[in-house]
Image 1 (cartoon, helix red, strand yellow):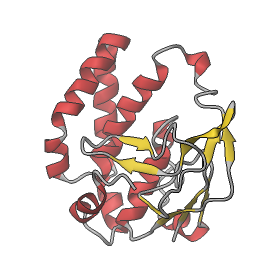
Image 2 (spheres, helix red, strand yellow):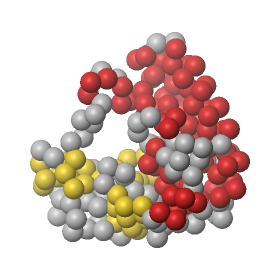
Image 3 (cartoon, one colour):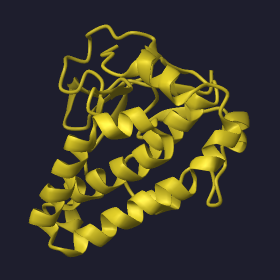
Image 4 (cartoon, helix red, strand yellow):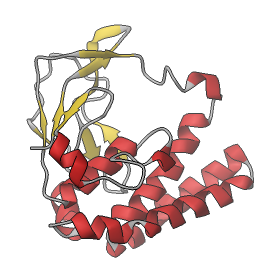
Amino acid sequence: VGMLQSRIVFADDAGRTNSTGVVFRNDATFIDRDFEQPADRPAGEDVFCVSAGAAVYRRTMLDALRLGSGPFDDDFFMYFEDVDLGWRARLAGWQARFVDGAPVRHALHASATRHGDHFVGLQCRRNRLRMLARNGSSALLLRTLPRTLFDVAASVYRGGAGELGMFLNAWRGGRAQRSTVDTSSTLSRRDIESRWIGREG
């Protein structure tokens, strides 16, 4: 076990859950498990990976998965850097567990509000592609292409034509480190995907 997830609740309403871990959806998007559910709702112990908003990582795992900038990739800046680390950890054979009984209050998007209305969506869509290019199988990349094209179109609509360059940089950045991920992997991409895609908890 390399990652432990606490129950994250909303700072303004501790009776609602923000996250009990991360769920890997069929279109290769990721959401917080149990989002908006009652905080007393039971949650399964095994999760795909943890949300770094409130998590504990094993140091030996972080050291084994270091990239040039450290265990977290600086290129993500904000959003999905924790899921990228968790995905790489799963490929390397590490597991994640949810530990109830240690709730943490979280002010959702508190650091992002000063960046404007569309900042979170733009960052998440770019970083999803960066993470997918690095960690996903070729079959997953092809199968989720419609979602990726939708993300590009939505970002260009919101952020302008310059978003095309941002997506190209995200793709190139992800692909450039694919061999680094392969070096630390002990499981195949397709094995991880077949086990976790679409599993709600």
